[in-house]
Structures are given as C-alpha cells and as structure tokens.
Image 1 (cartoon, helix red, strand yellow):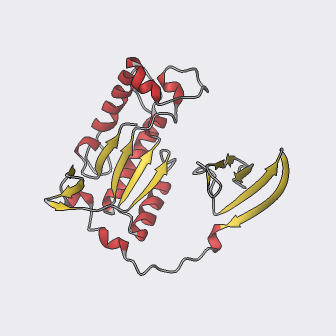
Image 2 (tube, helix red, strand yellow):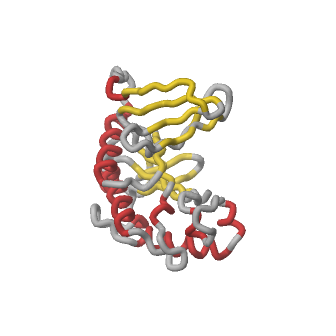
Image 3 (tube, one colour):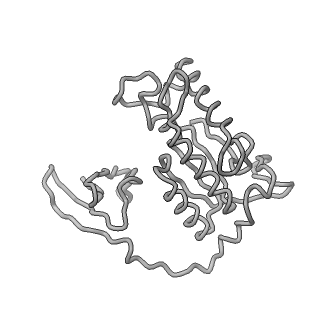
Length: 231
C-alpha cells in the first residue's frame, strides 16, 4: 500500500491502484509543501520519502492560456449551452478547467485558488463536496461559516474571470440523508428515495438563493456559475 502523510498533524490518505500505470488519491487535505510518502507491504513499512514541493521549479509555458481570461465574470452575460458548444453574448466560449474537492476551510485557501488558476490561465473550476455544509437533513440548514467560505470562493474566482461548475455529487456527508452517521453513502439513494431528493432540494434552495455578501449576487443570479451537475 502507498500512503500520503501530512508531517504536521500525521493525517494520512491512501492511494487507490486504478490500473498498472496510475495511482489516485483524494488527498486534498493531506498535500502540503512537504509531504511524506510511505510504502508498506503487509503492514510492514518498506520505504519512506519526503517530497519537498517548494523546490520544484517549472519553466514558463509558451502557450498563453491566460489569454482566455478576459475580465471579471460580472462584466459579461450568462454562459449558455447550444449545439454542443458553450456560448456567451452570441460568441463561442472555450474552457480550460481544473477540479477541486471540498468546501474551502478558510478564505486564504480561496485566495490561493484564485491566484493559482489565474496564473495558469485556467478559466473554470469544477467543484464537488458542496453537501459538506449541510447540518440538518430535514430543513436543509447549512453551516453558516462553510456557506460563507463557499460563496467567497465563487466571488474570488469571478473577480479573476474564472467560471464555476458545481457538481451535485452526493456522498461527502452521507449521514445527512438519513443514513446512520459514519455509514457509507451512495448517490444512488438520490434516485431511489423521494425523501432524499426532498432534503436535497431544501438545501439547494438555500444555497442558490442566499445573497453572496462578496459580490452581491445569489448563485442563481451569478454569471460565474455556468452549470450544476446532477450525479
């Protein structure tokens, strides 16, 4: 087995072996400027190394993807989809995107996302984990601090001309759908149980209609949001 270890707090994240060539890990909470990689066989440590990402140097690319960024999203109309293309103000618009998991734990993380995406010329973020903020499955009530951090992320991306694609993946907080806390969730329940869908709708109504204090727009009225995935 292969694990990533945060040297600060000791938290770990396992790698999943998807095929013979690639390893995958949802390690967004583990990666730090210095990260420990441990390799074990039958629970016996075989090898260990510390990777110092601060020493990695990348040459500038000759491909200027940041030309895709053309000012704040608020300066333009809504993005629409038609005939297999995305359109904005009557012209095709193209996206070069990144993907992130989890609601940011603080505003500094959102600032970093916005700066890093802008520097790389990335003009859209796909995001999953929005259900982390739900605290009451009956009313759909949310954790106000997490909602605030989420809206701050959307606002900061929009300021940089970076769009937002929200995924409705269900599973980061499985207990919110009536399952015993700590049990393994499945997004299949969304399609099978009307009670789950009703809970989800209540939550989304709060999420989409709450005014963003950082740009003055609710998500339903914000051109930064180009779509919502039902998964």
